[in-house]
Amino acid sequence: MGGVRLSPQVLWHLGPEEPALPEGDVHVWRASLHLPQDERESLYRVLDPAERERVARLPSLSTRDRTMAARAILRMILSRYLGVDPTALKFSYNPSGKPELAAPYVSSGLCFNLSHSHGVAVYAVARRRAVGIDLERVREGVLIERIARRFFSPREIVALEGMPEAARRRAFFTCWTRKEAYVKARGIGLFPSFRRFTVSLAPGEPARLVDVEGDAQEPLRWTFREFVPAPGYVASLAVEGRGFRVRYWDWSGGRT
Image 1 (cartoon, rainbow, N blue to C red):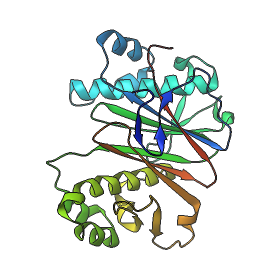
Image 2 (image 1 turned 60 degrees about the vertical axis):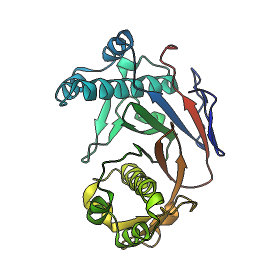
Image 3 (image 1 turned 180 degrees about the vertical axis):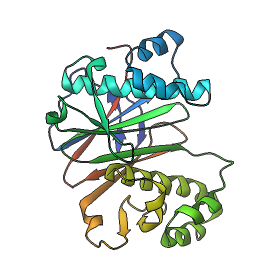
Image 4 (image 1 turned 45 degrees about the horizontal axis):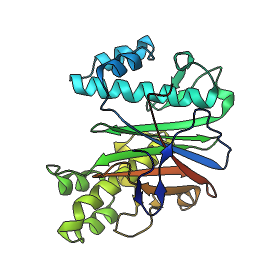
């Protein structure tokens, strides 16, 4: 995937072995989860017993393989920033299940988030600022109007249903990724809160948090970015604060 321009704003480069991460930067990584058997076996050994147990409970072999790879690559990416073996990392989880670095790595200030869908994974890494990331493959067979009426805010539903049919499906997935990125950055549960805030979704409209129920100042705390990790996908990044630079890295599992 390296070096391919997918949009005017995003140019991907091969990720560095020892990435510098000043507090004014946010790093986005992407990785393919379609891996040869020997690489999958190598990644499996990176996970701790609890992670292996969680993966083993997933319903299908393909889901287990991709989840395992996504989680192991997260460990390997974070280990580059910390300069430690990926198997040494320890995680804790907030009440909504969001992973965070545990002692002795809390003092690093690293904040991170990950998402994967249909064989592609994306990761966000920052220092001392909350980040959330999400991606979806734009696909047929999803009942977008029914899902939107259940989970989107009234304002988003009106905007979506007022669009030409040709634009509606991509706008739905764009909206969904922005909403997920935001709640993941906040570290709160997904569905109970989805209807309580509004994001932009119209084609050509900048990615942003428009409104949060009961908190007029909340949209000022967050910056959104939209990017394309692979053809046929949409992805969104939510970052606490403003005035940062985003850099886009390709993961290469061959360099470990």
